[in-house]
Image 1 (cartoon, rainbow, N blue to C red):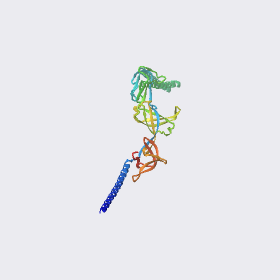
Image 2: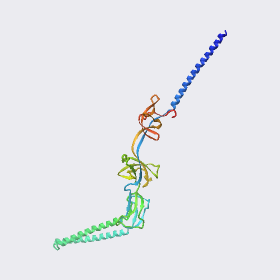
Image 3: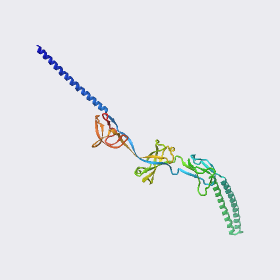
Length: 364
C-alpha cells in the first residue's frame, strides 16, 4: 500500500517538473519574440529618410576690379572769352544742374566791344544808304547818256562794297553778342564738382587754349572694370549678370551687367587679362571712383539634384545610396555623383527627386 502511494507522488513530481519546463520554454520563446520585435522597431525608427533637393547652381568667374568713371562722364568746363573772374559760385563737392551758372567773367570789356560793333554797323548802314542813292543817280545819268559806262560801274561797285560792309558789321555785332553770353559759364551736364582750378579774381586768357574752371563728374556715371584671366574670358559674354563687393562695403552685394569686353589684353605680372566693363544697376551713390571690388560674373546656371553627403557611400563598383523600396525596406542603388559643396553631393544619375534616401542607420 505504501509503495503505490510513493509511486504516485514521484509521478506527480515529474509531471510538475515537465509542466514547469514547458512553461519556462514557452516564456523564453515569447520573450525572445517580443525582444526581436522591439529590436526591429528600434532599428526602423533609427533610420532617417530624406528627400533629394533640387537647386539652381551658378557657374561663376571670379575677378578683381576697380570702380571707374564711364567714358564721357567727366567734363572739364572752361572759358570761351578772356577776362577777370568776377564770381565763382561752386566749390569742390558742389552739386550742379545742367545749365546752372558756375562762374562769371567781367563783362565790361565785352560790352564795350558790343557797342563798338553796333557803331560800326550803324556807320556801314549809312555808307550803304549813300551808295544806294549814288547808284540810283548814276543809273539815271547813264540812261540819259550824261556819264560813261565806267562811272556807272564804279557806282555799282561802291554799292556792293557798302552792302558787304553792312554784312561784316552785322557779323561783328553777332560775334560780340555771343562773347557777351559766354561771360556766364554754365554747367554742360548735371553732376558733382570734382575740382576747381580757377579762383575768383584771377584773369583767364582764352586766346590760345581754353582755361579749365572746374571739372564736373556726372551723377552716378560709374562702372566696374574687372580684370578677367585669359583662362576664363572665353565663358564671359555681354549681358551676363554680375555681382561685386568693395573694401568699403564688404557685406553689401552690388548688382551689375556685363557691358563690353576689351578686344586687346592687358598683361599684369606676366599674366594675360582682359578688361570687362560692368554697368551698375543700383546703389551707385554708395560708390566712388577707384574703389577696389571683388567681382563674380555668372556665366551659366543649371538645375541639380543634391543629397546630404552622409547618404552617399562608396564600394569597389562606385558610389551608391540606400533607398526605400515600395515595401518600405532599404535597398542599395548605384548612383553617379558630381560636385560636392557645403555638405551636399550632386547626384547626376541613379535617383530622382521623389526617391527617399537613407541618411543614417542605427545612429550612424
